[in-house]
Amino acid sequence: MQGAQVLAAYKADNGAVTVKTLDLKSYTAIVPGKLSFDVWDVRGEEVRGVIRIFATVKVPEKVESVNHVWQVGPSVTAGRIDRHDFGPSNMNSKGVLSFNGAQVGGGAVDPITIKKNIHGILNAVSWGVLFPLGVIIARYMRTFPSADPAWFYLHVGCQVSAYAIGVAGWGTGMKLGSESVGIQYRSHRYIGIALFCFATLQIFALFLRPVKDHKYRYIWNIYHHSVGYSIVILGIINIFRGFSILHPDQKWKSTYTAVLIALGAVALFLEVITWIVVLKRKSYKSTKTYDGYNNGQSREEPLNI
Image 1 (cartoon, rainbow, N blue to C red):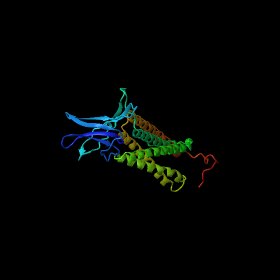
Image 2 (cartoon, rainbow, N blue to C red; image 1 turned 120 degrees about the horizontal axis):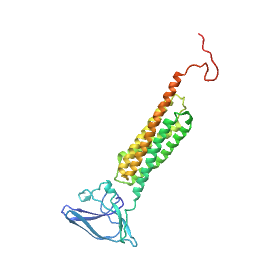
Image 3 (cartoon, helix red, strand yellow; image 1 turned 135 degrees about the horizontal axis):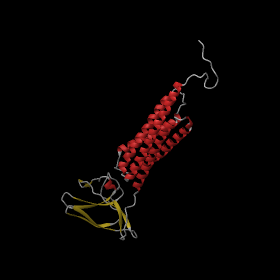
Image 4 (cartoon, rainbow, N blue to C red; image 1 turned 90 degrees about the vertical axis):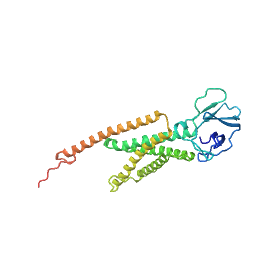
């Protein structure tokens, strides 16, 4: 783990067990270094294929416990220790080492994990819930004249809120990337950048929106709708990629999946209702007979030709 003070043991080319101290500041440069605390009598031994490390460590006064991490590396190349994997078992290899005999639970959550959780929650709420909800409001509520202009303000409110929260989530992701030297999730990162760019375009759409009868309004509609649906699709994809990276408890992934299913069910129901309303309106207009009145304003007589 980056920032850890490490005792690492491995078998040298001559078969002897070698122990080195590492001040692990970066995953790209795993080199020996002096630890931040005193340690002596360091040695290692191998018994039946298992390597053990022995050392005497000076513990600061009045310290009753310390955080403890452990890993198994894949190999050693030319005397240099290679980087370990970053699977769930690796990331969960941590605990608290007690010096007073007290029973201690799992280790405290490290700051990086806290930032990852914040990043995931912000993006799930913004791109994964609020943005699709705003799309549903715009697509289906405007079908009903009584919902105008309430649907528009609800739509804008959802999208602007999603953008603000999403930018915060995007910022935490960029910060995590800068702090995790040697760890890269390229597809997750690139999709996140694309989401930010598309969402910014949508914010501009609010200010570039022409009036309904403008000759370029249809072009704006194509741009606005295509970018909006792209954000929804990319957002959902990236959230599930985030789940595969963060490996949270299954309940979080299940909860978000349930939210998506609920949104999809609501959208499907409203899609059916919308088509029924639209088809009824068309049917009513096509079968309406001439009653001698001009939209209820004044009576007109049929033309005599």
